[in-house]
Amino acid sequence: MPDRYVIANWKMNLPPEGIDAYADALNRIEGGNARLVIAPPYPYIERVARRVRDGHGVAAQNCSDHDKGAFTGEVAPAMLREAGARFVILGHSERRAIFGETDGIVARKVTIALATSLTPILCIGENLRTRDAGNASRVLADQIRAAAEGLGSGAVILAYEPIWAIGTGRNASGTMVAETVGHIRDAMGRFWPQAAAKETPILYGGSVTPDNVAELVGHGHIDGFLVGGASLDSGKFAAIHRALA
Ligand code: PGA
Image 1 (cartoon, helix red, strand yellow):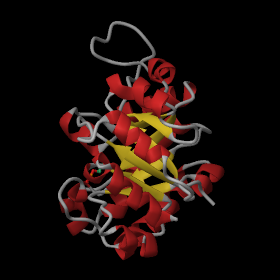
Image 2 (cartoon, rainbow, N blue to C red; image 1 turned 120 degrees about the vertical axis):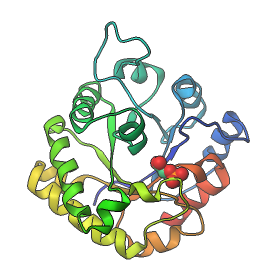
Image 3 (cartoon, rainbow, N blue to C red; image 1 turned 60 degrees about the vertical axis):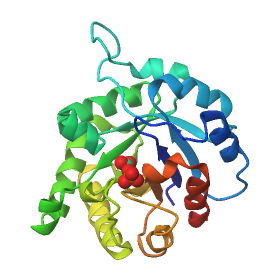
Image 4 (cartoon, rainbow, N blue to C red; image 1 turned 45 degrees about the vertical axis):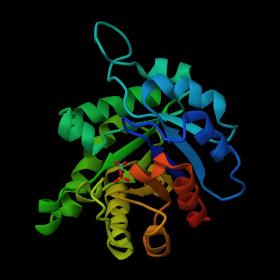
């Protein structure tokens, strides 16, 4: 059985209740069988890592594809690890669409993150045109094949995030997610090492809220969630975590 995760992607936001109150609220959560991970903006990684209790994890939202050098504005994976991150979100659709990250760049980031002992949270997803044209499984398989180059024998967490569901309030139905997860496992089986294909957790992301989480847990065949908007409220994030139990 793959491990389970619920990951808070704050993006370029902070929780209105404050970072310390948010971390303390998560520290009070008892039980559940999914690991909680928080992905704050870079400058807050260290603070969150110091505040959250053992067992909860901290992720960076991105990293450089180089380990050091003249790359103004970039942050190396080793620096993120030193600040307390143990995970890194890679290939998020906002990075791909707004910052022009290609499959090749994402694969290089996967390699360097793994070499630094950061676990990549690798995001894949199709846009609406692709979904409507019936090409979603082919496009997702292409993204999985491209990541294989960076993967080697390393372990990642995969986040399936249909682009049309991110931040839009439109989320995929449980049965659509289950069907897509089947295609994703199939593509992993074709392109990834056997162990990775079986053991990689597959999370769903895209407008997940406490209101729609039960349907996704019940029918989605997923191992957790990558949550954006709803993760900025510790109460909502905790409710999503509880729903997975
Ligand atoms: P959302 O974001 O939950 O706000 O749709 C998810 C994500 O982009 O990871």
